[in-house]
Figure (cartoon, one colour):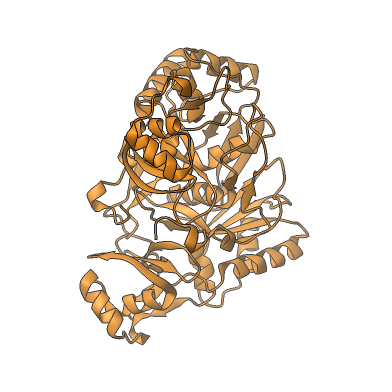
Length: 254
Length: 254
């Protein structure tokens, strides 16, 4: 019987711009007596990667342009926040009062370009946290550094909570990956009765991100770190979350 | 440190119309020395529920109407299969050669109304497997029966693989639930810094379905049963997967 294990790491410290995330992650694992071994997948909440990378922007420093002012008026949002959303986006897809759904430059479609104002020290004035500039690269660097420090070979997923069309409630999705098979391509394989499989592509990264994000949010004290252990077939070929993005011309919901 | 465990149950037998699913599940757990206890969530692949409920339809018995013939021509699909898709759907949302995306009568938006032709004994002629008629009710009945037989209180999720807009690769989603909190409503709660949480609704059922479906498909021998154990805060108030459906008038992607 196959068994997978997910551990959620408690008592993670607040992260600030410039913090050495690898150092803090390794300390936190040690403090909690939690060993990371080859084949494990470390799921990291986007928020701490963004914070460490200095993606927290004070709204006072943002000068909204005309497009942002107009959209802010239509959606009843802060024009400075809307300017940040526009800066991060390739395309505004839908909007209504309270909601702006965009295609992020990274390809993800979602509300507010993934910009978040919760669990952020507001300090002097309001601020907003952007997604990491290149989460696949962030994941790669984290993996490289952790692998080297512990002499192991792990997978990394940077995960963020997303809203979806048609279904209520957020689920975690992968925005940055390293060292794992992101999409499992079963094209050409046959089913139990020899018929060619119709479902040929399985999104492994999003499924793992979904469960880990739920578990991380379930603790009384929200925590940004989870470890999944026990995949029988190893982590697979390493790809990035960029692989997940369906080519725009193939999508029926643009 | 919180720890969750997922077990995938191997060697599950083929299911036929009229099979006693509860009996077969309990036997399978016993054969595998796998104990189910209160607080566990049993994730069951839609396919075996559909099969047991007689939702396998021989295409020879289907007489396509004019709408099905037209759509079949446009999408290069079997008109009999298209007729089944239309029977199961509230609305055809998009179509192109090879693809028909509908809103299922149950509310789920996806390809082919969840109708599947893989892992199905084709017998004399081609057949197709429909979703259970009322998966929430199926989940409720399964829970009631298993709870009674083992004198426990578990959660049940019936899960199916779904395609999504914008993101490649299928993930499992919940289509039937019993005995679990499907949506975790955090409205009014504050974040770590006292700001009201923007993300107020967390989809627990879909996140669990996603991970379990991935794990079930990962075994060399595909298996339709997984058990998740270890939620600290229990299973929560029981709702159905119907709760997940966003009201059509609130959705921006119709």
